[in-house]
Amino acid sequence: MEEEVNNEREAYTLVVRKPCYGLPTACPSCLSLYIYLKFAQLPFLLDFNSTYPDSVPEWISTKAMVCSWLGDAIMYELWVGSDRSSAEKIYYPDLPWPIGKVLFLKQAHTVKQRLGITKDNAEQMEEEIYKRANIAYGALSTRLGEQSFLFENRPSSVDAIFLAHALLTLQALPESSVLRTKLLEHGNLVKYAEKLKMEFIEAGSSSSSASYFQSDPPSSASRRGPSNSSSKPKSKPKRQKTKEEKTFRKRAKYFVVTQIVAVLLFLTFMNRPDDEVELEDDEGYGYDD
Image 1: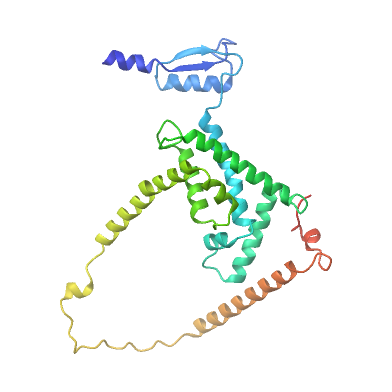
Image 2 (image 1 turned 90 degrees about the vertical axis):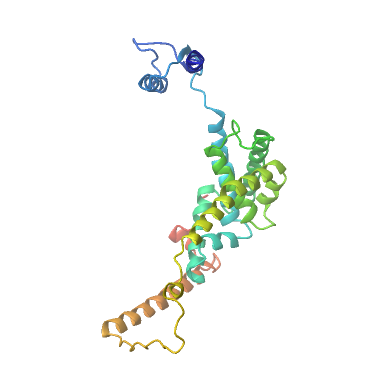
């Protein structure tokens, strides 16, 4: 049994560039990994390849594709797409409408800059974003096949990132969403997302909710026994507000009113035609050509 374990451990092979300058390998990345394995006292075989020894694993390129192509696509849908209600509900549900609207416009402008969207290339960029997303879905669908996870049939960081993307796309985006429609074309990806959601999200939340409600202390009535219907709670005398509290409340109301007025003025100028107010050139809010 021990001999079988040792043979399995010695099956690891580190591919590096050839020895040079009295070192087992002179490639910085290869040498650091060689030293790390020596620190761990892990037996391994050494193989040499001068062409391209430090090849990137497939899961790294897949993760980069999910984070970039699919990340850009859902960002575009939330902030730039025709239906932007999902972003407002996710990020600004508790803010007053004027403030939430201004923050939304500011973030939408930032997203356009990040994606390189201008007035001149808006349609072209939209087509390119959805084209990349469709390619990514196709590659992931082929990679997944009938497995439960994307790599080696076990969960990984790639699964976590894509599952978050898939659930948001399926549940947060409207039915008219182009990205949602493209994802629904790949049945195994949809089934994969629903299955993992039931196993890791809904099952976990139900168990935590059950433990939460079981840990609730008994009500005060059950601890004290039946209440006396004839007894009435004593009314507490109303506390008079101090001068400082009154002043603070007045200032708070004044602050809220001024903020609302400022937001309305901002929206007014933002919605005026370009030939009347050149905000984009003067204030730097325009698209980058």
